[in-house]
Amino acid sequence: MGSSEAELLDWASERTARKWPGAAVTRAQALRGDLSTRRFFRLSLKARASRAPATAILVDLGPDDLPAYVRVLGMLSEPPEEPPWVNIHRFLSGIGAPVPALYGADP
Image (cartoon, rainbow, N blue to C red; front, side, top):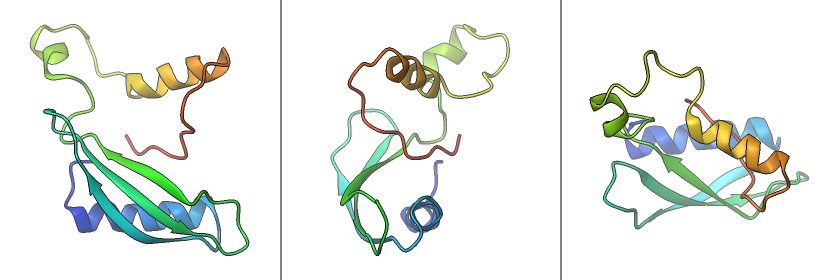
């Protein structure tokens, strides 16, 4: 996403309402990240007659969805159709591995 915090929260609010009609983001708390460009937020959700979770984690991948070394070393001849982490999540879920739910992605 690589957006301002306000844009991220607007995106999260819109996605929350679309995923769980009647639910809303009531709070966003920035979480400590690592040394990458990724940013993490814990979203508090208020569910009105929906099955929304009480909280969710929003991850902003920053300006690039691939590690810099992949591009520097020319490891891919063309950009992937979807970020590799989505494919890995699908694989792990498919074999029954305990992975967090993926509620949405906007590559």
